[in-house]
Length: 241
Image (cartoon, rainbow, N blue to C red):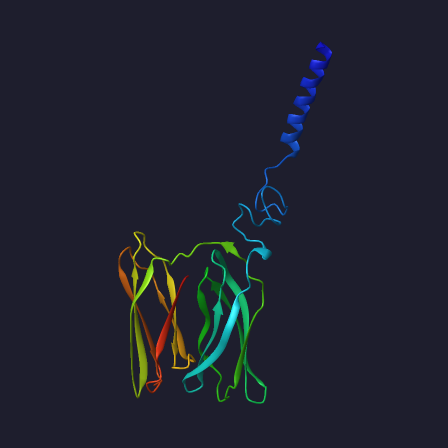
């Protein structure tokens, strides 16, 4: 009996030593599917979402608008249907063609897809010299790296949109209020101007450095073109930078 007990104690000690030597605590960065992960280093308690845990972003439209001789604003309107999934710095590629299908210009960029919000992949004042554009194409060039994230701008309210225009141009001042008890950091504000048929007439982007708790801030926009009274509605799309 004594011999058996001693043997069990020795085996237990060896097991404990073995676990200490060879067992490592599962993490979200060890390249293995362990712990409560659903995939390799994703799902469960990991901040990174697995590929099958999110829906793909949808590109509703891609437009260009002339804002000065040879200069064009280009934007792609992107919808993120994921309520608690954010994808920062998703790479994309844009190509602009003339009416003969000849490439005029192309460029690369990145866009952050905020949780359950729409956003623009926007590029302002693209110089195409004497060329005349006919269409523009947008495509993602890399898969979004989705992370768990709630809406950080749920407390941000759009309190006023003051639009005006004359024969020389148009302008818009958007007033935003932070209804939270915490300050908001640097925020990008995109706007889209629509006509009565919900066609996008114009778009732009500006940056707000931050909004203190309970405070308001204004985001100004100007275009050196008149829209001849066709603007019927305005959509404001804020995104945390």
